[in-house]
Structures are given as structure tokens and as C-alpha cells.
Length: 144
Length: 144
DNA sequence: ATAGAAATTAGAATTATTCTTGCTAGATCG
DNA sequence: CGATCTAGCAAGAATAATTCTAATTTCTAT
Ligand SMILES: [Mn+2]
Ligand SMILES: [Mn+2]
Ligand SMILES: [Zn+2]
Ligand SMILES: [Zn+2]
Image (tube, rainbow over all chains, first blue to last red):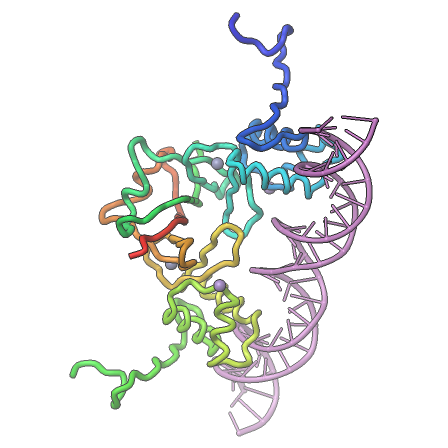
């Protein structure tokens, strides 16, 4: 047995690190971060607020916004916007876009086929510096 | 001389058509539409409101919003969102994305290199129906 | 432990957008 | 033409996501 999180069979919660990517961890930031990592369905700030009450019954909505902003600022999570809807939050740091399925309402991460580089297929003046790319799609996934 | 808009040298304003794409034209809708066609810099609703006062001193901001919504709904113009900033409006109906130049603040239309089809380079389940694609970029254009 | 800094909280404020209501103007009908 | 009908317009109120403020709490470092 090489690694295990505890002596008994159940996985224990990971310990809260002192910081992540230079962001000092607090109980609230840690729980917000873990919630996003565990439930990767792109919740809104209000979704996070409602879901996190189990673990932090006294957290305020302002703190949820503060934590999300701090995590976004430090590059630990990403903020995703669809039109003018409430912002959503995503823990997937790999380059990806978002597909909004009109049938289920769910939001899915979308990646490029291997070897594709978006900057290469856009018609931009040579020397253009791209710092950020956002791709959002709407449509219907096959019923499966 | 094959075509001319009037007898004298200056271009006359085009007449207001009865409708565009099934949307009944009104003076307000027409002026909003023409402003967007003439000033293709992706103005916000408030930008349109301020710029249009020359021609329609009595128009209300609510009417600007109503006109923009009606034009968007009928596919005559497009609504463009950058993060949570005010919506912007674009008269370019060809498939294109938007590049926000941090240096100048300007927003530029961006097209794909010839022959590129975005749906082909995304890794989506077969049978996925894409109804809408949005691409936004941020960065810096070369100083030229 | 103490002092300073940073984070959290509750609630107020902000702001882009939407809604409500009464009015206007053009279309339709006789 | 004159009456009626209807869609659109104007003004301001309402909404809702987000941000800000001020007071308190927690954390860090001495
Ligand atoms: Mn939600
Ligand atoms: Mn503007
Ligand atoms: Zn994502
Ligand atoms: Zn455009």
C-alpha cells in the first residue's frame, strides 16, 4: 500500500493547505474551492452559496463572491459567462470551451481535437498577442 | 451612369423600408439600425442612445433597448457580450468572433482563415447540434 | 498575549436591464 | 373621411446580479 488518506476504509477529507497558488487559504475559500472541484457542473455564486451551507452554515453570499473572485484572480478557477446570465465557475484549468445543452440545461466542457491551435486558424494580424480566448456554444447534445 | 442615389453629388439617405427581415420598421428602429451599420464599433445601448440624439432628440433609453432587442430577435444585428460588461451590438451577420484590444479598448471583428470550420475541430459527440457559437478574445494588437 | 493586517459578515448601494403604464401614431375598416 | 384597433414609444419604477461599506472576527507575527 503506497498511499492512503487514512487508516480506515473511507477517504478522509484532504487537509486544508496554507495556500494555493499564492492565495492564502481560509476555511471559506477552501470549502468553496472543494465544492467546485467536487461538483464540476459550473455552478453560479448563488448555487455555491446554497450548496455550501451544509458545511458552513454561517457563510454570507458576499463571502462566496469574495472567495470566488480571489480564486479567479489567482488562477485557481475560472469564471464563465453565458450572455448576460449569472456568472458560473469552473475548476478546469485546461484550455476548453463551454457547450450549453438546451435540452438538459447542463453545461459541458469542450476541448479541441488533438493538435489544433485556435490562434493558428484565426485570421489575425501578425504580431497579435492573445492573452485570453473564450468559446461558448449552444445547441443540443444527441439524446444518447 | 448606372446607379446613383440622387441627382446631385451628395448621397441621399436611403429611404426607410416598410420592414427588414419581417420586422416592421419604425423611425426609431430605422435610425438605430442605420447607426449600427454606419458606426461598426460595437456600441453599447447607452452609446447608441447618446449618439442617436442628433437625429431623434426625444428617443428614450428604453426604446433604444426595445429597438436593439427587436433587431437582434429578427436576426438583423447581433448582441455581443464581454464578461459582465454592458452588451454591445454588431451589424456584421457573417460568422465572426470578437477581439478586444486592451491597448486601444477597441473591439475588432475576427474571422477564421479560409476553409476552417470550427465545428470540425472541436471534440464533440457525434450528432451534436450546434445552434450558436461565440468566440471572444482579449489581447493586444501590434502597435503597427 | 498583543498589535496589525486580512477576511468575513450583514446589509446598503450600484447599475445594466426589464417592466409597467399611459400615450401616440400609423394601419385598418366602414 | 372618421372611428377604431394595435403596435410602439416614453418616462420612470422595479429587478437582480454584483459590489461596496462598516463593523466584527480571525489570523499572523512579534
Ligand atoms: Mn444556477
Ligand atoms: Mn461604450
Ligand atoms: Zn469548464
Ligand atoms: Zn462584430
